[in-house]
Image (cartoon, rainbow, N blue to C red; front, side, top):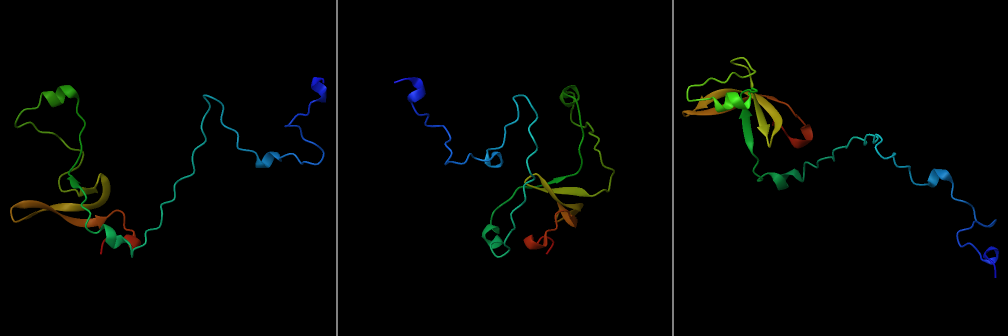
Length: 133
């Protein structure tokens, strides 16, 4: 028996149709080549009827008065009484961040000898979430 007499299990006979190229898996980019950008993620719709499940979850809220950039030398040189200039003028709104995400802006007020923020603007007003109500 010769090699020519053996049947190739992967050979395509006249009875079988080859797989069209359109159904083949997409080609991978060459090594070191640019990867095509992924399609933008579409946020899932929030069912307001189920949002009540999260009403008692605590979130970290912080208020940002302004920002500044300093070198390590400048930070190490700070002492009591040092002044750090911020990137916002006096009287401008402060940012209200929820878990690090900007959600609102407001003004600083004093309530019972403690600082507070009066919200003046909601940044992410999604009616389905009930923000601003």
